[in-house]
Length: 373
Image: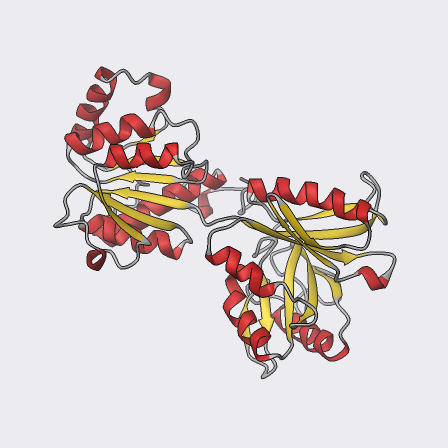
């Protein structure tokens, strides 16, 4: 929903009703993950995608229908003998899509959710997508780390789903959960889709150089909150890094240590050191490599610079196990030359590290294209 939130809010604020279609389950290969959404506005315009084009027309019709009759729908789309290319997924996968009408009446908490997302506050939306009692389909509960609002129809259901939703929220995952009709665990009858909206992951870029500007643009495109940090105020200016959420003038190691102590670094954080200067990058890496949870740590430099840097880090007391966490030289071997190409190379390595990809051409691989994290 996050990808189409602006378009959904525009309809919601106008007092009209939009059709919202959400991917709630994928089986085998699927082009979009759970949580991917498409909005159909009253004027017929569309925002977002649930399948990359395979079933959009059928979902569009479903969205028009739920707005007209007010009844949510749970539909499965996939390969079949009869209509593989009419409403099926040509990639061979299967997706379940929940389509519902969204208005101020059906979703009064939407503005609150938008405010939480904008303020980087973790929030999950739990929606009943299947139930023996049709009146409970579409019921919704908003779950935060220490709060919940709304009800799924019974206290037992609310308690069970709130606990599980917080677990998914902590992991940053969206998923469909199954329960008995009254929230009984290890039973079936009720299905609840939990859409997790964890704060966007952070990327900390050290070194206010042209490569940092290109990387900030690429990272922002991928959904990161980017901070550029450099101790030199003449280079660390907001005007030079328009894609960064913040530009900080500070020594990299001091800033990184303060962020860690404030709890602002987690397992999704990417740290990219681009300074090319041992007096900046070695102290920063000393701090970064000793942090217990960081998603990615990379540093720019030639192989000669890498060897010199590793020697300095050894002298600083870092162990081989700690140094093994370092991506150096940074990025995948794409033959990149320009700052923009190098930014793609770095982003590609971060994506591969997150999902377990090998960085090889898909024509040289076998098996599933989409990896699990």
